[in-house]
Length: 458
Ligand SMILES: *Cc1c(COP(=O)(O)O)cnc(C)c1O
Image 1 (tube, protein in one colour):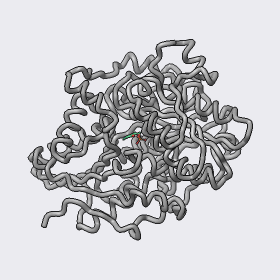
Image 2 (spheres, protein in one colour):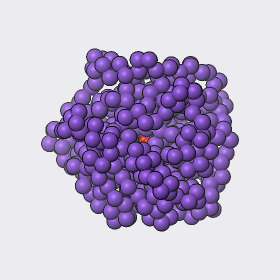
Image 3 (cartoon, rainbow, N blue to C red):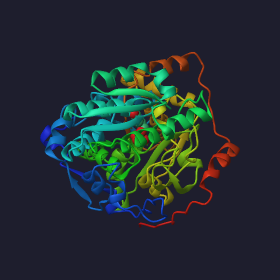
């Protein structure tokens, strides 16, 4: 009988995360004094146990039992063969998707939210503050905080706050608080509103607000949390790829192509990094992070030092960036509207180990609708980017007449994003492509910043 779904037992859950910093070189983050950031400088922002993970170069890091205990609510997640999707595409490729939509908040994000809430609690923290784009991260952190008895405050990008009211309802159900960003609660928010009272907001602005709110709390019991981009977030997500590898092994498969959508890079990294390790060790695999053509960080923006947020509170990070002042167009895949990209994902791009792709809005929804009508699951708009590139890879396998194995990360479901599907059906989505002039304009902010070195890991 043909395999449709591969399930691992609880006792087969990975017990360690994979840390890619053991295997690649990265430029260090740089602080306001022009020198590499010290762990102490980050102490007001993150608890020290997470800072230690952020800078660690240990290849394997133990997952605490308390974290596994919560992850077991939905993990190991299923690996499913997209038989009907393959058939509709008429491809000889075998396509597998790792279903991260089965978590309580409906995406991969609680993989790190749970770990971060655990480490904050263990460090004696009582309240976590964060930002959210589409609301996926805010709801994931609210869920995780509820599991560990922590307070949670979320600054949500205004355009998504208005488009997706139910994400706020989820956060409140889990006991979190959520306000639209820019808000009048912080200096960063007030500045952004003064510049443009009608701004749709951006992740860059919301990050500034959340950091400011966290570090200005004088109790010492509040810390900030980031749902993507940073090394420790990529680390926590590798449980996805480590499970997927075991699942493929069970059925005697190994991927030729690995695909994930990339906003800050975490779900992509989670699936891909364990396979990147194999590629570093000689395996031949094509690995594609996918972004919207309307926010082309990886495919069009340079590899530079830039701030992670608009108000420039964060250290300078070595990454592909459209500039910290860039306000991405209000496309519906809120989770992919970010000006920067994870430093580790960026480093792999500069070394040619992974190959980024950009796709346009209508192609993205076409892929999502085909997936829904074949596999049944209605994917998140972000996930549809990965599915669009999966279709391209499946078509290429068809042209080449090759039985390729493709694995894609189904990073989340779209049940709270149905209004954007409605707009696609009403023909209201525009294929925005950022022009060279707009990109050059947004990049003026790098003037005077140091430049990262072009490091070679291999
Ligand atoms: C947040 C989100 C993304 C993008 O974030 P990454 O850190 O790049 O993974 C992608 N898909 C879904 C469903 C999300 O919620």
